[in-house]
Image (cartoon, rainbow, N blue to C red; front, side):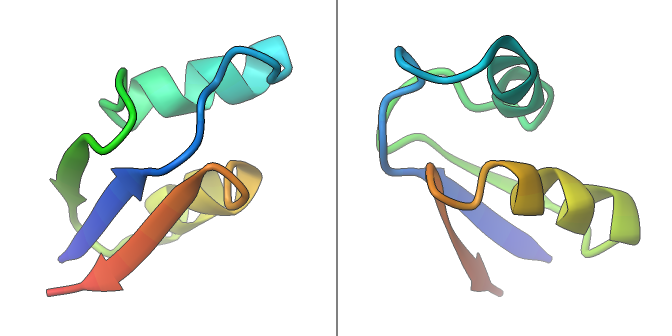
Length: 57
């Protein structure tokens, strides 16, 4: 399992990055969601790596 936490605002982001954050379930700063460690989730995290913080649990 991966814990994904949004640490920066999505206001100045590109539309595709905003969609990735929404699909990860992140809408607010400091919001945390847990996801299974799959290649698809890893790819989504890579797209918004400057906006999120990831920890393994």
